[in-house]
Length: 322
Image 1: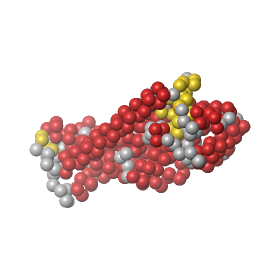
Image 2: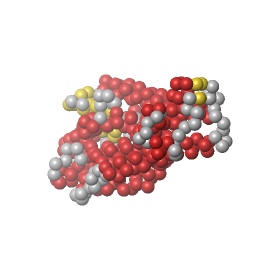
Image 3: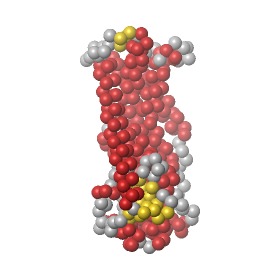
Image 4: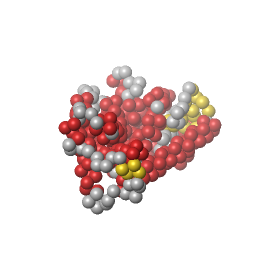
């Protein structure tokens, strides 16, 4: 049994874990209900909303933990809410309890996730280092690698570079090659490999089907943003769309070599070509960022998580003791 400040700190961490679980559940349900409507928004807005979904459980967990801390519980501004949300015996923490078990499980998963992502980062670093050594620099941030298979991708988390194969250079026109290179340079500009790494880390806390859809939608959003990066007129849009179609035909008959595959590589690949072409040729007006809805949803989720923590606490203690 632990008393005093250490007990308070551990109990607050338990509150944070419970709030995270509740928020994660409601965020997952909310995402699944609105995922099909995200295409009504501009690409930059889609990316912001996807980041909101993966970060919301953390932000809400932090706010709920602060609410249960003495900083708010001893004040009068939220006194009405303390009747619905409170934590019994905050100054006592039992080491052999579901409290400690939930903390250990969450910490263990977080460490596992962190080690996994750091290992991914380490392998990516060495793979990029090798590719740069084997290739030659065509221009700033652009390397040519020896391969008969047409491929183009961006890699490198902290110092990203674009890689294009000799096969791509031989099998595409100068105009198409320039469009592909500009697309990859857009990934460099946006630091997409680094953002992809962070997104993989935070999305790992969701259920498998939700996680896969989040990652898939973010990958597509990154490609849409890169496709549109240097477009300043309708003719340019048609040219980029045409290049996408031509590249997809080349890629159908050529599988990407294993050494050019990695979770942190951002490929100029044939996936979602139809959606990307339609996006380039679409001239409709997209909806603005739904700031009001996001603020209301965040406050509502925070309120639900805050009031659910104590109820969840009591439900768990129907089966387990402290």
